[in-house]
Length: 444
Ligand SMILES: Cc1cc2nc3c(=O)[nH]c(=O)nc-3n(C[C@H](O)[C@H](O)[C@H](O)COP(=O)(O)OP(=O)(O)OC[C@H]3O[C@@H](n4cnc5c(N)ncnc54)[C@H](O)[C@@H]3O)c2cc1C
Image 1 (cartoon, helix red, strand yellow):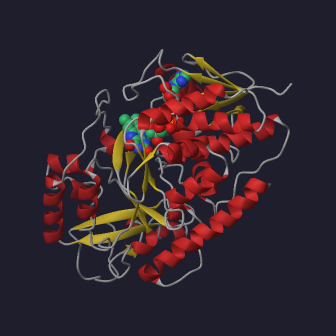
Image 2 (cartoon, rainbow, N blue to C red):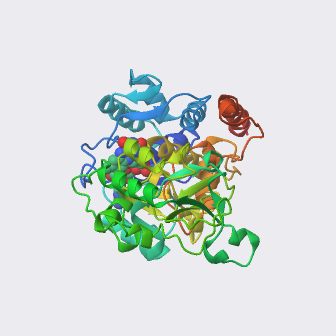
Image 3 (cartoon, protein in one colour):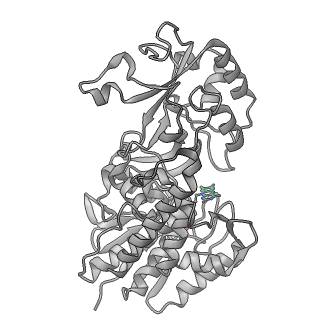
């Protein structure tokens, strides 16, 4: 008899993982703590509950990376996408759903599946044997989080994200910015030029501080505690502490010389650091923020060199339990120290309903293949699902690892020139290449 796959957490990732594995012939027990034990954000005992917005974002599979992820999941017979399509409500180019019937249908389909058993109750310990997927999401219960932390070490499990904005490298104006590490520190040329620097004169700095103080900020949800650590204060909180605080913190203008204007000393300097091995993404160092998204893009584009910045993701601080996947997981989504346990969903450091469901889809398929004694490699990095798994299992910088949405900056670049004008053709090239490779991967 085929061994059972146990999945902890019946959210976006756990529901999709259960569906995929069961459809491949593997019996699944899905352990969900709600409604017995609740979270501050979930309202029901339904599986696949959307905790906040009812949007799966863009459904454009030709020009948008999240739309491409929709496409890949549909091709793979995904439960979350099929149910979203059934309960779709008008939202322009976005895929929005009627949330209650959506979650009720996910629950009904899983319960009706002959190979799936749903067991209600909180799991608080790591299992010693068997085949398991942990998909307990950003609000993983305290008992299980403690067990994960005991296994991985305190530094490898975070309870809040503190995301600095991430920018596509090709949208930075290099006639103003330059590569240099502070005091040219580093053994190699690559280390000595590891940072991108954007200089500010006094007037720009003062206007920037004014805009930062005036910008609209998001509040924490009820039940979340605003537990900032001094090492990751939002920039607007630093600015509130004093107009010069940022100039003595992440914007200090020392140890750097602007090759575009070597005789002018900058009043402040914003630094960006490489965010992925491909070098296509850069995060703004120390710029975690709770500014609302609209305000954030406006304020950050005041930084010289970032006037035309395209954001792969904007900054934020949220209650979010996630592991340091680049150090902890292998390419099969297994915990290296306990390979009978996989992780999936937002707890792996992806962000969003769609990305979480996609990581559930992949974990379910990988676990099912392993149980059946088959070999299944993760999909190639040129696909949206492959780009995400490649990022979290090693492509991202482990030291600064923070949750990530899917975006084209995670994909190996396509060789199409032509700058901004040629963007539609470039995005189409990304999605065409991904679709061809995803089709091959699914067939294999
Ligand atoms: C307040 C808040 C607002 C958000 N808003 C959005 C948004 O608007 N759009 C968006 O795309 N994403 C949003 N997210 C992120 C969103 O939660 C995730 O993208 C998505 O739900 C993650 O899917 P998941 O399956 O990993 O986790 P979840 O969907 O949260 O599922 C995890 C499941 O595990 C269960 N569980 C936890 N611990 C245990 C345990 N020990 N034993 C058994 N079961 C357990 C939980 O009850 C839950 O059902 C938000 C997150 C939070 C916290």
